[in-house]
Structures are given as C-alpha cells and as structure tokens.
Figure (cartoon, rainbow, N blue to C red):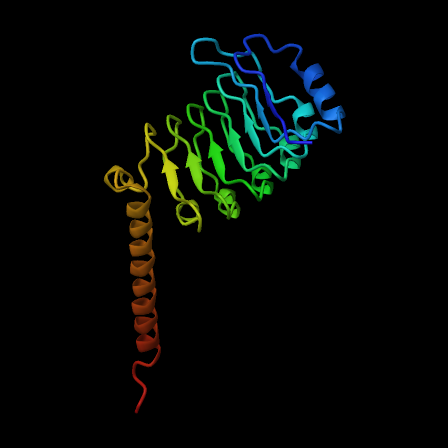
Length: 209
C-alpha cells in the first residue's frame, strides 16, 4: 500500500482534530508520511497545543502546523523519530525545548514568526539539519555550535534583534558567520598561547641557565 498524505488545511476550527487523529493513528494500514494541520494567513487555526495523537503516527516524515496559537513544543513529539521536516511557523512558541534534539533525522526546522528569545546549544545535536528557519522572533544571540552544524546550508534569522554576532556579520549569511566564529576561535587560541608563554617565562625568572 502506498504511503498517504493527510492534510487538514484551512483548519479554523480544530476542536475535533484529536478524535480524527486518533482514528488515523489506530489504522495500521495508514502509514502517513505527511500531516498538514495548518491554518492559513487569512484564516488562522485555533490549536493552542499539538495533540498527543500526532505522536502516534510513527511513520511521519513531515509535519506542518502553521498559523495557529501553539505555545510550546510538547515532549511527546520526540517520539516521531522518523521526522525529517517540522514546520511550526506563525504560532506563539517561546522556547525550543531540549527534547527536540531527540529528532535525530530532522533536516528542516521551521519556527519563523514565533516568540523565541534564544537559540539553544542543544540544537547542535541535530547533525542532519540542513535548513533552520527562525525569522521574525526575539533572538539576540546566535551560538557558534549551531552555525557550524555540518550539514546546515540555509539559516534564516532575518527580523530578529541580533546583537551577537554583529548585525553586519549576520547580514553576510551563514558563510560570513562561520568565518566570524572561526576568527574568534583563532584569536582566542593565539591569546591562550601567548598567556602561557608569559606564565612560563615568569616561572623561570631569576633562574640560572
């Protein structure tokens, strides 16, 4: 049986969606790879949380729940270990929880237009991540560990009040940020080496050679 795509787009009223999803999950013949529960720009949905029934769709590869009022990413979502794409744009999410790093196959993460203030270091565990979309949030700092993810090719942090790295570096894109952090690392290594030489020199001062 071919894989199915389950789409509930334009979901302005989603009060019955848990019941619908429970039936989907209970049907062994339905091995859905994609589930789209998104509202639309002009017709926002009413979900404030991601129903736990979603996590029973163990074959899910792509999950889209854009344009709702979701406030957090629940822990049960970490059960979707086959997930490669997660889109939760245009919600009210305030943080990226650590259990999200359990989605080891994730290649695309979309969290644009939310209320996120921090990019956590644990995102660096998502070694397969290729695209990270965090535009229009409240992020002020970008960690080097995330910028240097080995497979990351697209990193969107536009419309954020970023102070570190400096805005002119961020404007250069992913490559510019990587060069910036590499330079900082090299300068730090040189500084530590010079400091060590000074300490060794002071320790040997006054000794006869």
